[in-house]
Image (cartoon, rainbow, N blue to C red; front, side, top):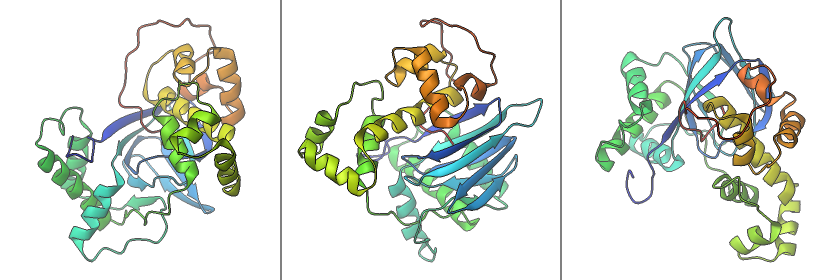
Length: 284
């Protein structure tokens, strides 16, 4: 732990074999990213931000984004992402004093990031580096990295009032394989089912919609950041049937899950040996 509040941030190595555009992706932590191969296009408020290989940027939390990942043959698309708790951004900006924090959280590019800052990003992303440090030092390193990004134009926008949808999404993300029900969610928030349903309706959404969408976001992250067999991915997000999972994934994202990895269609059994390529907390 960095201290009693902040966990050590997790990095994700995102790989994608087929070109695809994903709509309404939601990250539950801000992400510092570097596109390592291919091209990434991020859209918010009908404005597109393009990241070519080697570019760095910042993706906000709890903001539905459209992301298009474009591989450049013969390589796959690849991005390195570091999920950093929002309070560390806020502490870093207070320390800077003069930083102008946008009123809304939007994607941003870090232009001309110095070599020293790029090396710090790589250091923070290497598994084990931060965990070996005293918590105060690890926190200082991350705040330095956030400061470099801010000086290069990538500043995280102000935190919006947390929606019930966001709180529910975060709870489900903690265990997407669990058989969540409306009643369980209502009890977790100390309210009746009718009240939870009414409050979600006021946010123009519903429990089943949030549950399904959170599971599909998690599934996409697992597909992009691990080599888990698809049948195991299905189980990890609450689907006993791989075919049902595949159909739901295609309905949500418009492509078959195997296409994301650039793999041919084939039958596979649960229980195959798995090699993880990195943390799977995000799907930028």
